[in-house]
Amino acid sequence: MRNIELTGRITHIGDRREVETKFGPAAVAGSILEDHTGSVRLNLWRSQLDIVKEGDTIKITNAFVKTFGGQIELNVGSDGKILVLTRTI
Image (tube, rainbow, N blue to C red; front, side, top):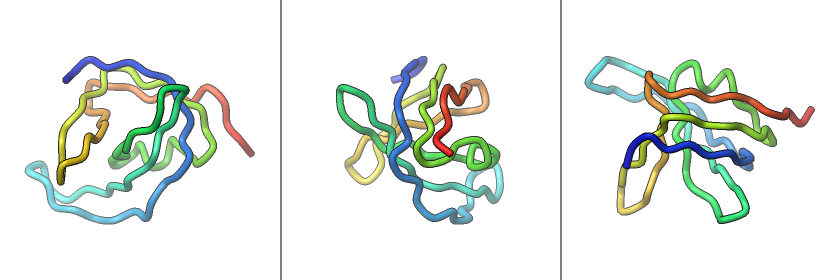
């Protein structure tokens, strides 16, 4: 599924780790994004890790869903965008 747009709150960001991708090494961390319908794992890649903090309410545009290890995961690729709407200090 592609071209997903949603708004939610980041309730958890896991540890940053380095992985090898087809584009070379990259930093990634799994996070949890929640809204009134439930929660989904959101993978934060590279510079996205510096944009989002736990407690932030964000709007995501042009995201896509993949299944990994039998679980649905949301990703925001190079053509997607994450906008921080509110930040909890």
